[in-house]
Length: 345
Image 1 (cartoon, helix red, strand yellow):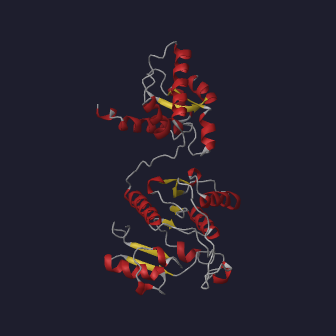
Image 2 (cartoon, rainbow, N blue to C red):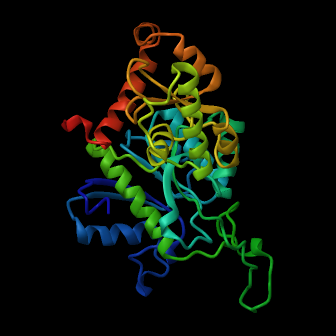
């Protein structure tokens, strides 16, 4: 899809997985995947410059693969050591990178998401990559990933050799360190992962901003709690809740779509899954501008102590003392105005 969208230069690097890509035929058995793709791509877009390398990424091949200042690096590796090393190299070189996590043992395409690596849940590969990046390279996040919210349904299959009996997988390894036994893969899911990645890259290159659905694992009880907490706070502070102009559905929008279930002062996710459930118990909705009603375009999420500090200051003070924070909140609230049609009034 990158090719069909007009991308004019591609570097393909691969050593395996001929069985799971869309253009392979029986005649391509024995041909490296990268070469097979290059041949097919030349029939679609002959003007595109396609370079194919049958190569495994490691420290010795880093310069050959990552030199030339690529606009984007797409990581589809399923070996943890290689994957972590590539992602760390991209961060070190300041390259934009998008990583695909585990597509194996999934069957529900509607649960595929794109988010920061910090926010990927229910994915053992993401968990392992996060741990290794933090431990070995001090990288906490900042890498977008495509992942599935669906829990893997099966584990590694037993390896059966030509005799039909279970054998030692390492006896059949071609590339050292790569597993031979595999998690069962439904062929449609990796293909959809690829489509999501292509869409992300094309929109990024075009400068077209797409608001992806935030990964927020909250339920209706959490939104009801936030709504009730807002009403009680308004009554305590102003003596009435008459200026609360949001219902439960609008609270859901503000908490999930605008602030992604975290304090407006947090630029990145620190808690996911059950951790987010615990974190939201320490949050409340408060007015950004205390002179205006508590509406969908004037509410921010803050921790209790942050809310007290916020309400002790004016917006002019915040603008002067914390201009970056002020601009970030104003930009987010502008998004709410656009989503609810206020900019057209």
